[in-house]
Length: 121
Image (tube, rainbow, N blue to C red; front, side, top):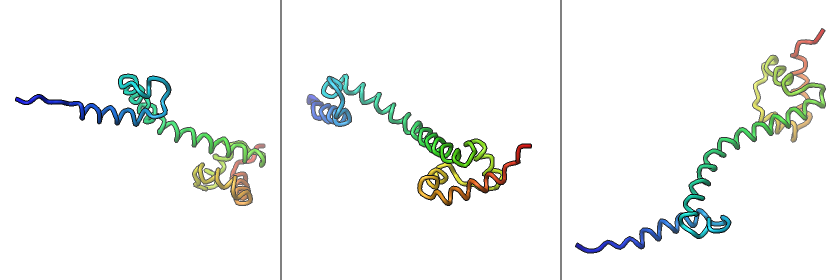
């Protein structure tokens, strides 16, 4: 039976790992054992951080909204409660974008939310 030489297959596998490890520091970019471990870990981080990115962006929208509504004498939670009571359903992304690009429109929305809030005695 003929001898099986696997150099081509191994080289192709290694090439794939080294391509993914491009830009890594030290031995992690050019030694297959270190590169494979580093690439595996990088893939784990990438998978996890696709979820984390969504949380981070939502929190950015909330921070922007809080800063924008404080100019009108409200805070974020009262503003969101006022929107709910007024029956305005807009997501935080759109509201944040309006606060930045369309201040007049955002001011009108804030006034409606403020009007819907119960007045403190």
